[in-house]
Length: 342
Image (cartoon, rainbow, N blue to C red; front, side, top):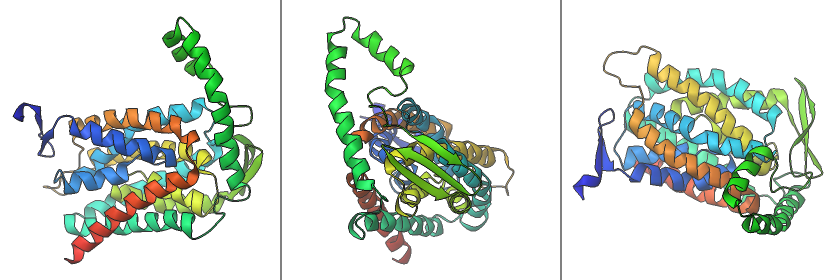
């Protein structure tokens, strides 16, 4: 089966041609439900399985985000579940942070072994927050969080049947389906199943979702986003894998309203990350530009996975979404930390 192998000259990776898009598709399908692109798991896959360990692996991860994320973001926007004030605060905080993270990665973490320890510690924190959400507290999703879960999935479930029937009976079903997705931003959702901004100021943000009001402190969210940007810039993930659990676990925001904002902020920081890793001069001998072909192939799989993940998110309980992410992250974190000390 040598004819199925591909050589990626920039990274030196040699693997099956179908493997990068397949892995990215599976990871992004599940992680996008929680507002995470899947890059935080894709990086360990590249380092451990593909043996791609130079600083260029971070910029390749950013490239994956840039190609893959737009499909999921578009889906959240169409369904009216993009929390724009939250998105603005996250982007404002993470963008300057990612530039600092770039220098941290190149100057202090060029050694693969040290970088893996850093990755393991970041992932361990994320896993602990997610799993603590599920088994450590009963109402981490905030006031009305459980009702939000039940109302949102219940309403979408009741509207799903008639809509599918209508599409099946239409003689031009495929054309009608595609047209409706573009023309009806909230297709498939009942009235009220989308985000409405109540107030947006430098002190506080409030919004409504499914009859419940949620809020967060603008300065606090900005500060955390800045720190996350530094970590994400060094890791090559854009920060979504950290900020999404923080929004859910610390700020008590429902995952249905966080996912789109986290993905869009990850997209913006990833664009900035690629620019820095590609254009900023470094000491000779350190490769930081992405493997464009490998990153694009990961991105193609992620593009499809994120679209489907964003679509199916409304039918999944928040606990299941967080449990899947928590277990996956914890496994990788323990493995990387253990490898440093062995």
